[in-house]
Image (cartoon, rainbow, N blue to C red; front, side):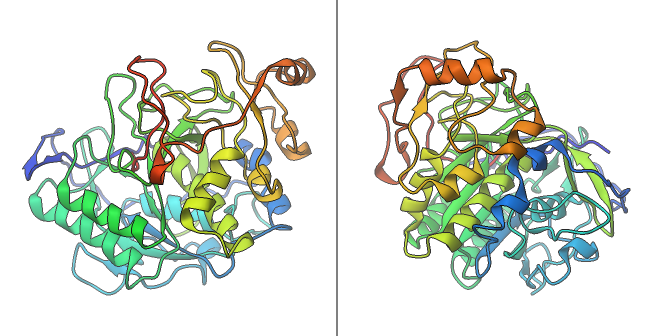
Length: 399
C-alpha cells in the first residue's frame, strides 16, 4: 500500500483554510513482511551506524497519529506518551498508521525475518497523538479547528517539557503560520531540543510550509532512489536537508510492512540521525548537533544551498564519523548526483542510489570545494536570495 502523506493544518490567525472533504476510513491493518533490505537502508546502513551509536538514552517525540506498539519491531521501544485527541495519558494507538511508520523509521528493531529496521534502534519513542483524520486524497490532516491548532502547540510544549524529549519529529504540515504553534516551537528550541519537520508534499506551487519554516527547525525534503527531488516534495526557503522519502518501506500497524512516500517519511531519517548524534556527542547543544548534521551532507544539484535540497543529502555515517565536518563540493544545477564522497562506505555504493559511478567521484573531486554554511537556523542564517530557484534554505517545520 502506497501512501503520499502530507498532514495539512490550514490555520491563519485562527481562521482555518479548507483542504477538501474529510472522509472516515477503517483503521489500517497488518502489512506483509518484507524479507529484503530496502534501498534506503542499503544506503544508510544501520548496522554500520550501530558501531558508532544506536540512540541509546535519547528520547524522540513523534507528534503524529500515535504509534501502534503491536508491531513486534517496536516492542519495548515506545513510552506511553500522550493522546491529545482524547485527553488520555497514552499515545500508543494509531488508526491510520502514519505515526507508526515514522516511529519505525527511527527506532524499529532489527528482526531475522526482514531487512527493515530503524536507524536508531536504541531510541525511546514518545508518541504524542494529535490527529487520525484522512482527507479525500488519502492525506493525513489535523481536524480543522482553532482547538486543533492549540492542541498541536500543546503537543510540542509537552514533548519539550514533561516528556523530556531530546528530539521532536513533526511529520505534519501547516500551509500558513499560527502564533501558538510558532511560540511552542520557539520554546522547544530554547529548551535545547532539536526540532525536525517535513517540508510538505504540495510540490513546486505550494510555497513555504510550517512549522518547517520557523527558526530553529530542520526542514526536510524527500528524494527518490536516484537521489533527485521527488516531484511532490515542496521546495522553498524552509528546506534545509533532503533524505529518502520516495517508496520507503515502513512498519505497519499490527505487524509487517508497507510502502509509503512523502516528506513525512524523509523527516524521521533525519530525526534518527540527530538522535544518534545526541548519543555520540552528549556534551553538544542542539545548535551544535544541527550544525554537525548540516556540515556532513553529500552534494546535491543546485550548489551548496538550494530551495529544493537545502544544503544537500543526508549522510548519517559522515555525520557520526567526521569530527570537524567535511568540505562539500558544489554540483552544478542539472547535473546527476555523484555516487560516492568522502567517507561514504560500501553499503551506500551497493545501493546504487545516485547516477554517477567512479566518474561522478572524479567530477566531485575536481570541483572547487566550499564549506557548507551552518544555515539560517538558530542564528546561523545565510543571506536570502530572492530568486525562485536559489533561495537559501531556512529554519522550518515538517510537511
